[in-house]
Image (tube, rainbow over all chains, first blue to last red; front, side):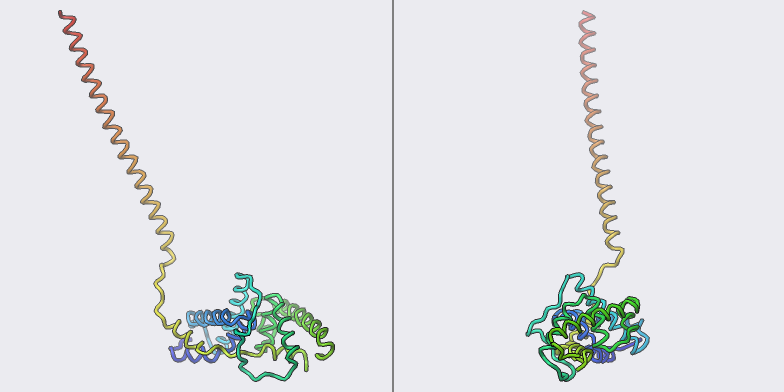
Length: 168
Length: 95
């Protein structure tokens, strides 16, 4: 795909929330998330010739972002951490729900193993199909299915225990 | 509220930080840092080893030459002394 500077700038603006959000939800640190997101776009710029379409670019960005995030936590042995100063603004209006439960759910998500966490993020942030998640993470669909199943069961059970039946 | 909806709410997209795209573009448009090609390091190591080997060889050659010169001088001095002794011995014999 051939893009001039203006077109690439437009592509960055189109996809920046998606890439930043994947990194933010996974790393839970604003600076690390921006760092990873910038690296992803920098890499995109170097591989533009391999991009065939807009849809391909979206999938490529999701794949590279998820792998960069997982690599980063493996390299630095990071666990997600978040402080008030690094909280990001939501790009969509907040949905109604119990703030306490959401906060608790977020903490439970943060405690998931890296691969499970990324699978949940891609599935529920990006509404990706299981095959798309598998392709993005470079693992078999069966692994995604079992990983998601285990992660969701863990989250649901923990949350239900806390909410005492508020969330069904 | 369903569990999945709650999860989607928690994982809603976040807005990228202000100026993110500008920072990406300035990084992309910056002139590339001059990087040494991949073959540079092996070549540099090979060159260093070659220079080292030549230096050691040259040092050994110079040392051998000096030793050779010293030996020649020592033999020459010894020969002179033998000739002197021979001359003196002849003089004593002829007397």
